[in-house]
Amino acid sequence: MALGDEQIGVAPLDGRVAAGAVALAAVALVAGGALAGLVFQAGSDWSGAFAAFDLYLLRVARFTLFQAVLSTVLSVAPAVVVARAFSRHPKFPGRALMLRLFAVPLALPAIVAALGVLALYGRAGIFSGALAKLAGGDWSGVYGLSGILIAHVFFNLPLATRLFLQALDTVPDDQWRLAAQLGMGARPAFRFLEWPAMRASLPGIAGLVFMLCVTSFTIVLMLGGGPRATTLEVAIYQALRFDFDPARAVALTVMQIVLALVIFIAITRLGGNYTAMANLSVTRRRYAMDGKGEKSFDLLVIAVATLFVAGPMAAVVIAGLGADLGRLAADEAVRCACFTSLALAAPAAFLSAGLSLALVACRRALEYGRRQRRASWLEWASGSGASLILVLPPTVIGAGWFIILLRLGDVYAAAPAMVIAVNALMAIPFAVRVVQPAYDAASARNERLCGALGIAGWNRLRLIDGPVLSRPLGTAFAFAMALSLGDLGVIALFGSDRVQTLPYLLMQRMGSYRTEDAAGIALLLGALCLGLMMISDRLGRNAA
Image (cartoon, rainbow, N blue to C red):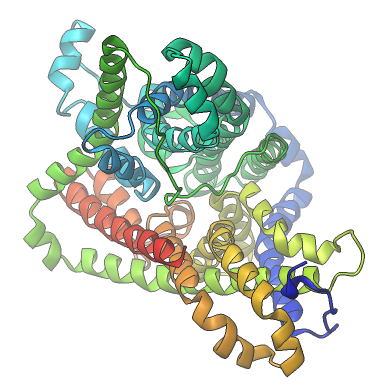
């Protein structure tokens, strides 16, 4: 047993436990308050809430599942082929750059990606002429199911590819060496080595992609194009902002929560990881056994996948550079939106990193001092319970608080606090994933020494844990800030002329057909988020 793992007990009033309890209480307040608001609203008119479970709600739920199933199949099935092609060719020029390119969609705000899809495949897009010829007439654009599927594949194909590459990396080198010695061709190698590794990860990856597509809000809002292509989250937003029908919003929210909870449990049981991030490690395979035809096919697959992923990003850059950036820079609304975005994202990221550190430290303190085999509910809640917040998408939490604040007074005055609180909570599972390994490792080295010398609280954080955790906390901060900058879920409900972020202003300019302005704002927003993700990735690599 490692020295640091010797269990000497934890003081009942350990400050880390108290901080973790406070963090959990904050999470419960925001999430529970939203649920309480929805229940209170339903309780004031049960007949209205029950009546909202009508054919429209069933149709929306059916479309939510339908588009998620199609998006999952279209993302995961090609990802098997693309990951295998990358795995079998570990040394061709540009491979590392392509894999980095596949990480970019994770950093790109959904509204920016939607604009890129429209710039390529929209009615006036780059490929509209060719698509019109293929369609045998006019090209009406990609609004509706087709646009949703393209955008979801753009986001999830690269993610699934990188996760399958991780699965392929688990095949022992000895097996590859033996296969090479036996002269095993591509097909037998796929059957006996590659497919078993990917098949083991397939349920978790498919479940993860399915969950992301079920809870997709911005893509459906921007590309849905009408009531025929509406998901539950978009319908909640429309019920509150446009129809002002709280009873229907409650019914839709209940359906969304049940659906998300079932999927979350299924993903957990299948071994999926909802908090997959951009800085996944991708190592290289050492043995390739392909003929010329197979090599050509693999390189063609890689080229097509790369062009598909790079296309919307290139379109955003081209369209953004074509906008009058000088005029946009002088536009007071753009400058205010940029300042508001940064002013809301920074405290949200700071809060997320702080709450995550409190939860991680609490879990470790309880684990270190645990005398019985079974973990207490507080240890479980501080370790993995925070991930349950992902069952409640930002739109659902925002809907609950929107209904509460509606009864208390000016809803839109609370916009800054709501955006900060909800975005901070949404980033906690990702921040915990970054901070926890570093904290646990530092604790294993220093726990007994700190106990012997009586170093605790602020002194321990300043002298012992702080220097070790500075980079992981910086990574978590940058990642959380990027997520918050690109979020449209809460600000779409609470945004107004008084509080506008860059995504909200971008949506407004698109809605008023000021497409050039929207392209310029999308370029600015994408560059900000990409810069933050690069900082996060660099800090994470240096910390590893």
